[in-house]
Image (cartoon, rainbow, N blue to C red; front, side, top):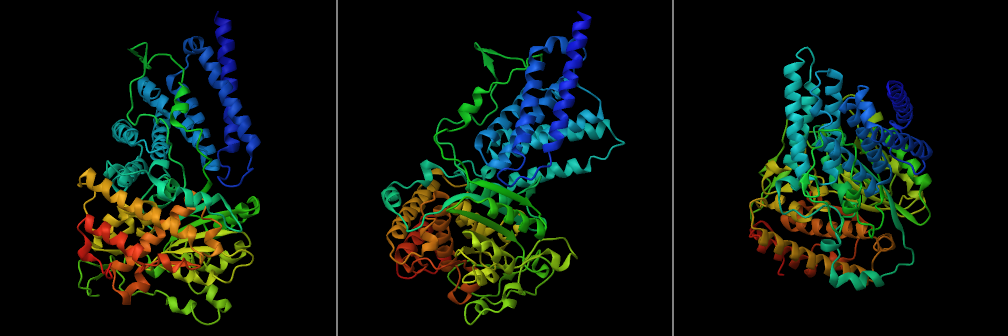
Length: 602
């Protein structure tokens, strides 16, 4: 028996070493590209699944041979990590759910907690497990799980500080601060009734416009398959390598499950009505949960390459790879959120808008510099564009002192216009990218450009380091952005008031979809992507954002506070169009904030 146990233990250790070697090969693989090392992932998955099955079948012998519970947790954690890695490469929801299932099992069975090990290496493994589980739970919107895990992470960091005084856990304290700050900024946590950022068939598919959208057909129709999401601001809200703005856009470009969804509370697992105690030797993980958390009827999510603080050369390399691999008749969405020239950074110029009287006295600059070096939008509208126009202004991707190597110029994007691009630029230098219109090298690009400055009734809401970007917020959660802009207390409001407000928006968006579908003046650039639900929703929300900001600021200041799209959308949906202004007016009156707007006679 002893010899048999020894053989089992040696076989297990050999399987662990083999799986770990394969894991090391794929751990640092880039998260973009369609065929990056796929065969390696298949091999490493196979190795870990074989290892997992072996420890299940021989658990008793392994425990007698000295197998620790934390070792089982580490194997499950590696499998969860692999699944999450596949999600980041493919955006397939099932991989994200598989990752969550393994991580949740580790938490429930207390693989790390139950052992009471005073080993520093094991404590670090547990800390990393909590951090990874938090990221997966955030993306999956498991708010109750996030709250539970945050408390456990806090307790663990405090325990480590008390028991390992010779070790500095400052970085882990910062991790705790990051997730708490993220939760305070994310409306999923602050507003109980908030609707999902993801595309929901219940909320985002408007019945009155379904037939018109279904009948709409342009001469050329593009499929939305790939996207690049990048947010780069100093001190912006983030957790791990996921910034708040990138998180909002990520969610906005995925499907929300419309079927039965896994309960948001961590429930006790029961078998035959009896609560199961997982502190013992059970190694089973209920994979049936995956079926409950995914909806097989939904189309695949578009792929998303999420870049955290990339260098300019890395961003360009990613764009080149994705453009090269883009299937025919497809479009890439590129979302770039970053500050302009370094002198703009940490400055939040914003107009305080409190009522019908408009003055420019209450302009706020939130840090040291009062100088604003915004480029004039007129310089790119009239006259011929010289080569210098493509390299005048830029987005700033870098730490202090990196100079020109950290500047992303409009001209850097031009080579990629050989493929269809849907560009969303959120920056105080966004209008510099107007020069791309007409300078394309093969395909006309669709451009959504943010205002130079945000506009709020309460100027303190303008701090991007606390609340994220206003323009991105409008594109991903329009009602919440509207309330934030007007100072309406969304979190304290009656649910019925908010539901009625959402219904006003839904009715308006449905009307606008019909107008777009029937408009004879709709540019082909917009027409060829209108059939895609994600891109159509972004276009409609842009129209809403533009109308709201246009009527919230005085006309002479609109150039700085109003977003721009190129090519132009039909005049029938301009900010001054009655069908647009009347909807914004109705929403403002419903929330009793109309005194802050300038409406025409609607």
